[in-house]
Amino acid sequence: MNYLGALTPRHLEVLHVIVQHYIDTGEPVASRTISRKYPMSPASIRNMMADLLEQGYLSQPHTSAGRVPTELAYRSFVKTLLGSRIVQAELDRLHVEIHNAGGVEARVERSSQLLTEITKNFGIAAAIPTETQTLNSIELLALPDRRVLMVVITRDRLVRNKLIQLDDHVGQDELTSIRNYLNSHFAGWALPSIHRELKRRLDLETSAYDAILRRVSVLYSKGLLDLGIGAEVHFDGAENLIGLDLHLTRERMRELFRALEEKKRIVQLLESFLEQRDGELAIQVGLGDVHPSMSELSLIGVRIGMPNGLEARVAVLGPMRMNYHRAVSAVLHVGQAFRSAVNQ
Image (cartoon, rainbow, N blue to C red; front, side, top):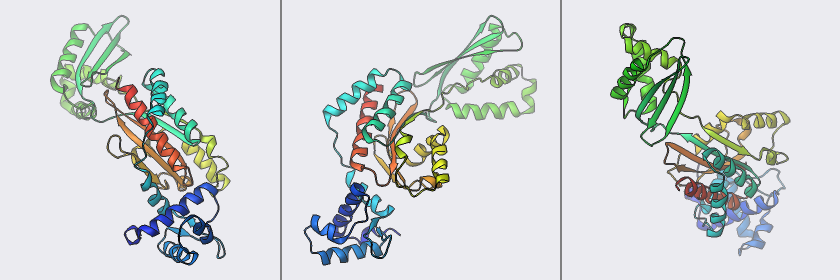
């Protein structure tokens, strides 16, 4: 249950001091430790910590031990970081590094490396195709040896080429008819919708008697319009998770590393928890919904719209007891630098 509304400002201040102390030391926090940092009597601190324990913000590993922040406490703590400011000098440096990397793939790779270098955690950067890419036009060119060059231009001015090999000869006039059919029927359609409609038409019995659709079927089986690039994902720093006190068995640690090696799972992670508006920072504490071995990890990231039908996401994955100030700053800096580089 979320008891955030029941906490007074003083409760929150004490809670955030406890969280920060636990992040710094990794040791359960005693009331006397907090009374040295916060101008309040030890008795008042004890009472507040008892309230926080009762309401689920703290746990007590042992009867005589201090208190440890729970996932709920981290969620409250990170809300205080969303106003972090970006230092212009650092932003300029990162912009130069990412811009000089070159194309989208190289910039994605460099961004993940920078996130890892700055935070000493697991840095992730990705460029993911969106569902909004729409067809502007398609061109089909006959080449020697029964080859066909397929050129797709989307409304975002992205041009993609694919060379295919046919079993039978198809002349340029026939390819022109197919091109005209596709451009006439599907210009302005989103690419996923074109795929669904073409499949529907090709599944109809009447398509067997339509010469153009028969040829479309052949080209479709060879990858017609299957030109969208997959997600470009890079991640670095898995070794930084070794040795952390994640309370994982050896088998669970192996499961975690196997999960982090799967590109598809990383994309799922980004798409599940970085759904905020373009440029809005997202912080997810606890990732057990993605994989049980990730229950003690946090994700901090941002989504960045791009002008070529892609969306970029940059993120840091680390333990709940991470340096959130550094991670938030790194994600904001790298995200801003990436945006500036791709928009130039």
